[in-house]
Image (cartoon, rainbow, N blue to C red; front, side):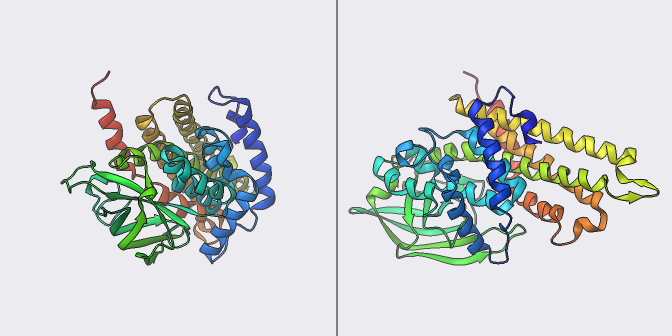
Amino acid sequence: MQSDYLDWPFFDAHHGMLARELDAWTAANLADAHGTDVDAVCRALVVRLGQGGWLRHAVAGIEHGGAQAAIDTRAICLIRETLARHAGLADFAFAMQGLGSGAISLFGSAAQRQNWLPRVAGGSAIAAFALSEPAAGSDVAALQCAARRDGDAWVLDGEKTWISNGGIADFYVVFARTGEPVERSARGISAFIVDAATPGLDVAERIDVIAPHPLARLNFNGCRVPAACLVGPEGDGFKIAMATLDVFRTSVAAAALGFARRALAEALAHVQARPMFGKLLADFQLTQARLAQMALEIDAAALLTYRAAWLRDSGKRVTKEAAMAKLAATESAQRVIDGAVQLFGGQGVQRGQVVEGLYREIRALRIYEGASEVQLLIIARELLAPQH
């Protein structure tokens, strides 16, 4: 159980209290966190999470509705792990509120924070993070969406895709090139807050994926936003995006932990109830070895995840550690959940079964916010960088 490690030195006293309170809240409030109308369910979950006070942890600044002055990465990770154990879409809804507004929490002006963060924390505004493009996913240097200054405004032209909350968001933090086009360079990228109702912003298509998440492709055609919508200094977009991802990439690992823990719990209950050859499935050494390996993988991933979160909350740069956590947790969770599906046999691949849904959820996480192969590149780059 998650409580097994809440006394690890990575956590403060309030983290344990937070996790226990949320665990009780999710059991009482997320029984219906599913449905065929994913958009409607996601909107309802944002409202419910806001009313429950949980979205306060997704933003920074008590004066802006946040739970604390600064983002508490460990709290975000514990929340994501707990929500993921109960309902994948609830985890998604919480995470996208944080990721979508993360640039504003970390780099936004006082006016930007006051305008958007209270609404994000309260669940009355849905946020989205618009970085990826058809030819620029993990490779931010290939970004082509452009913004040009025109008097007291910026005009955006280009395309974004794989945008979580695309089509249901109230605003997007959009990354666009503001400098001269530079081949294969991350320089000259800036971040903008774009209200979803802005003329020139269109949802080009909705994207259906293996996990039930609202995703879309966006078009920007002469999309004009006030100069005050620029987040941070012009040209700092790459730094802003990476700093935001350093927080929420670690939390992806936590969500993977939640999925893996639920899979292990389901598997334990199943094997202790499933008769086989005059015994229980749990009596066989092959089953026991599989369960032991699953538990080992979960705890190893948890150590990497909460180390990265603790280091970031301690003020350390965690690019390498966050990549390690995301890589290890998502890959190991895939193995854990696959093991659970195997233990369930035919039931494990039946649509509607818990482990079948977990299988679809975890497959997406191995790609979201940087595929596993990209995490390997990040780790290697950090290892090879000059040491100071």
